[in-house]
Length: 370
Length: 129
Image (cartoon, rainbow over all chains, first blue to last red; front, side):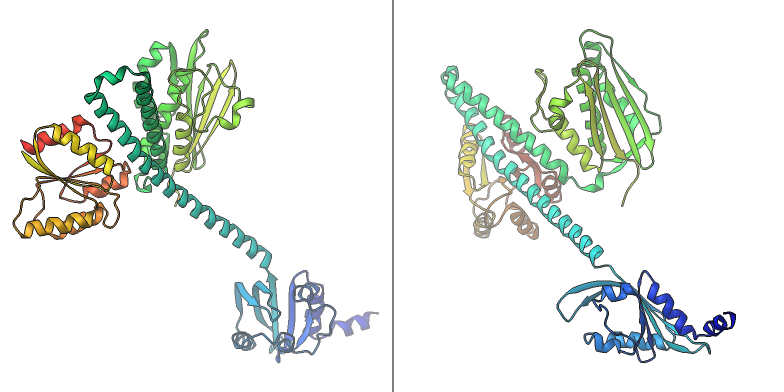
């Protein structure tokens, strides 16, 4: 037994390579100096549709006649001692199929330290490549749809503005030249319809503009200072509604965004919190802030009347959605807020229960991300 | 009394603006061009012949053939202005348009439609004084 094993262990490195290669879980093939097969792993056979065919002694170039001079040159370089690799190479096979391959070609050495041939290691990354391309395509489609939509919004809002403006103008002149007509109910209705149209067009415009604002107006914004500024504006309303507001945002917390948007988001959420406070308890609004990794979270909680999310969850941030019969609710605030948050690569969520209150959580980046 | 030139392709707006302008008793002649090219060419001829040029131009932005921007570009190449005052008068509220208009020296102000009578009075006060 022992001598026999010694005998075996004296096999040339070539045969060790071969055993190793046959069993390898990767696509590996070993060639002699003439690029004829010495061995190939099962994965190699599978990846290149070689089945069980006899490979030993067969030239790689006979099996794949489409292999070009560029590859032959690479093989020659490796036979001269070079190691060549490529993370993603494209191949058009003779049968018309396409393949993306990551490969590594290097020489192997015999007992005497001479180059005995080359080893090729390849990984078929076609599937990965295809899904990458699919994602890329989707991204491009989405981008172009988004651009078209924005263009559309601009054109529509511009043209609507022109016409709505003319109607408003005509009514104004009519009111001056024919004051007696103003008593007519139909004329009054026309005034109010024209006013509504102009308001709608203005709203549309505001939203179209949010997304087209140039990114250059981004800066670091101190959240606490912004909130204090907003709280000054909302102060009188809070006093009137007897709502106590606690700003507990840490002094140095920052977000990376567009100052006017951050201010508008805070103003809108705080105004909402005051507006929908509950009539029969100690009304309070609590504002918290924290930094988590590259995001800053802002939470604005009230103990107000709340909203039935089971019923309205999907619509809270929709356009022209109102859920309470409040004279100042237009159903645009949260829609604009969400658009502004998203224009700064942030997100907004709501948590609410009828009778116990509502919490809005805004997450915005706190550092430049490009 | 001043002469006013309106460059705008919207006949309704032009008519309405003319009605108010005439109503002010401060405007003598009102000339209307339907696009930037027509305005530029005609005004150029008048200028060459030493004719009567307007004191105020109201320029719309979105127009066929030559839009307002093209008109402004061509005016920029000229040494002398056609009018003493040029106002961009448009339905656009796009900040990009507003910023762009600011780059033109000859643009006195960016006015957004619908034009209110009060705004027009202010403009006339400024120019006629």
